[in-house]
Image 1 (cartoon, rainbow, N blue to C red):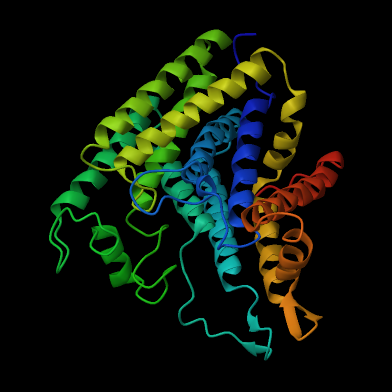
Image 2 (image 1 turned 120 degrees about the vertical axis):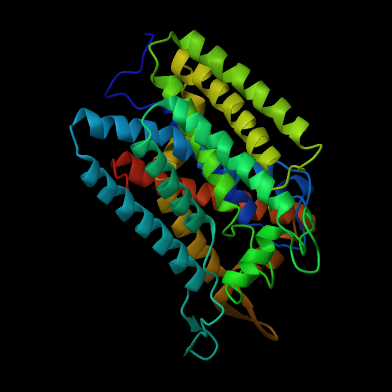
Length: 380
C-alpha cells in the first residue's frame, strides 16, 4: 500500500501521541519534587533534557493530525465558515480547560474560602495548544498550498529570532537571553504582570507562542508528506532525512540562539521538530509498514484520549496533594502518605519518587483502557 486510505487512522501517529501524553504525566507527577532524576527534569535554562522534548512533540503531532482532520472536512464539502466555527470552538474549549486546571480547586481546603484569583495564571500547556492550533488553522485555511505552510513555519521562527535579538529590553538591552532580561519575559510582565507561572516568568508566555506555532506548522508539513502518493518506504526515508536535517540545523542555529525550551528558541523548534520526525518515522516503519503493533497498544490507548487523560490526571494530582488524611501527630496529603509511608521504606527517595510517577502513569493507562475497550473517545 503506497498511500493512506481515506478512512484509515495512522496508528503510528496515535502511538506517538500516546508516548507524548504518557511522558507528560510521568514528568508532571513525581513522588517528590525534591527527588527527581535529571532526565525527568527540564534543563535549568539553555540546553535540553528528554523532558524538554515532550511538549514540542505534542504540538508537532497536533500539526500532523490537522492535515488529516482538514482533509476529511474538505472531502465532506464542509464550508470554510463551518470549519472556522469548529476551529474556534475547539480553541475556546482547550483554552477554557487550561484556565480550569489553573483555577482548580476553587476553594482553600483548610478554610473552604474562595481562592483569590487576582493572580491566576492565564497561560499554560492547554492554552498554548489552543493558540497554536488557532493560528496554524488560519494559515492552513487561508494558504492552502504546502509551500506556503513551509514559508510560514520558517518565517515565524526567523521573525522571532530577529525580534528577540534586535528589540531592546529596558535595563538589559537587545539580545539578552537570560531568564530575567529576555524580550519574551519582559512582554509577559508588561501584559500579564500578575498572571504568570512564576513572578516575572512564564514558560508558555505570549511572544514564544509565535515559534511554537512554527512547531505545529512543521507537523502540518509532515502531514502533507504522509498524504502524498509515495510509497511507504519513500515516506519513511523522507521523514528520516528531514529529521536528521532538522537536528543538524537546530545545533547550527544553537551557536547563536541556544536551544531553550523556556524561550522556545528558533534552534529549539528546529531541533525538536527533527527529533519528532525521527521518532514518527521509526513508529511509522514499525507499526504501519512492518505491522509490528502489539508493543504499541498501551501508547495507542493513551493517544486516543490524550486531552481527556491530561486533564483528569491534572485534576487528580491536585486533589491527591490537597486532601489530607490523619496520621500520628497531625495530617498528611494522600500523595505524601503514599510517597513517605509506602514507597520510601522500600526504595531510595529518588527511586520512590520515580516509582510513584510510574504507578500514576499505569493507573491512568488502566482508566483509559476501559474507555478504549468501550470505544469511548472524547473529542474536543
